Image 1 (cartoon, rainbow, N blue to C red):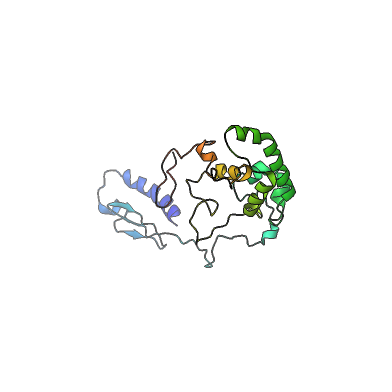
Image 2: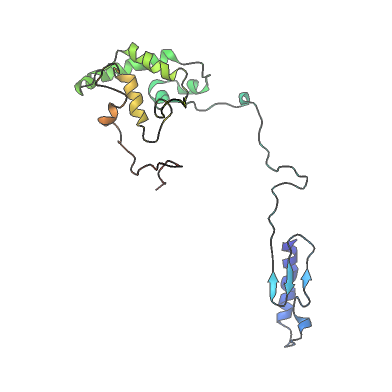
Length: 220
């Protein structure tokens, strides 16, 4: 091994340095050269010690992959978070632990409808004051239900990218979801981008997004 060989070489080197002025080549380490028998290709010569390391294989001596990955079925794990579209669980689900643990087939529809009713009760007057046209709660629930039952992210490659068909980095997805929850989208003066024009949130990233991979601005 390289470490053991180096430990042996050190005292021999020190001994050669303290010889009493004898400059014969036999007193110098590595004349003649000495080679080790391992794969490190370590040799000594009168020009010093040269070590060439080889790359060690990631496989064990038996040829097996040393990394062992769990192959348990999904049922062996406990889900701790469940989120598809933005702010659905944040704005519409009160019993979050139960929602996270439930199957995706359980839409929590009654809880969503109750939360929507509460939002409209509190916000509709303010929306009218902003010149917006709020939707009836049941109409909003039907619009929203088409997207969040079940609450998964779906992408149709035959359709243009962008919310709700996936999401581009520029999409103000939270504002769009709020518009879906609160606004009458049959009104020709309103659309998914209405809240983004007020705006409720920052209108753009502080750095432009690149057009090519990785599509996100560098961290800073």
